[in-house]
Amino acid sequence: MRSNRVDARIVNHKSKQAITLEMSCPWVNNKEKKSEEKTLKRNGPLRWELKQQFPGYEVQQHNIIIDALGGWSREMDATMHEIVGSRSREVLRKMQKAVLSGTLNIA
Image (cartoon, rainbow, N blue to C red; front, top):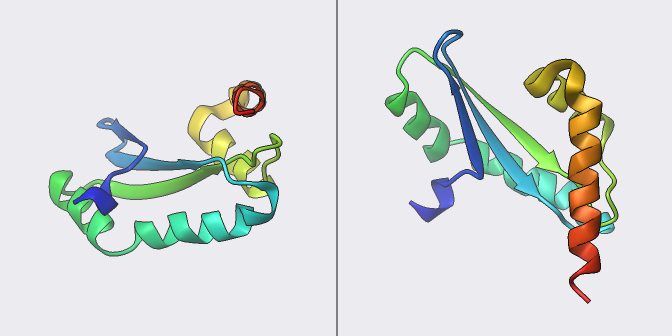
């Protein structure tokens, strides 16, 4: 199903985890709405499909939302730290730089 596609999937066979990443780059005032949209996608068919594909694995979803001006939430700091560890700040800065340079090329 098209609605069940995720932007990225990380499968850790050692810790038996399947992590899905939903990424978005909304305008500043749409950040909360986009987060809710991505969270709703996590429940139902997507979660069931991943549990069927990886039986016995813990399925987690993380929303990666950086607004068009490069801002992110405190929640995302914690999420990135969970995903990439101590390099989370560096990764977020590179993501911010990519978003800002991509936004400049739109006009």
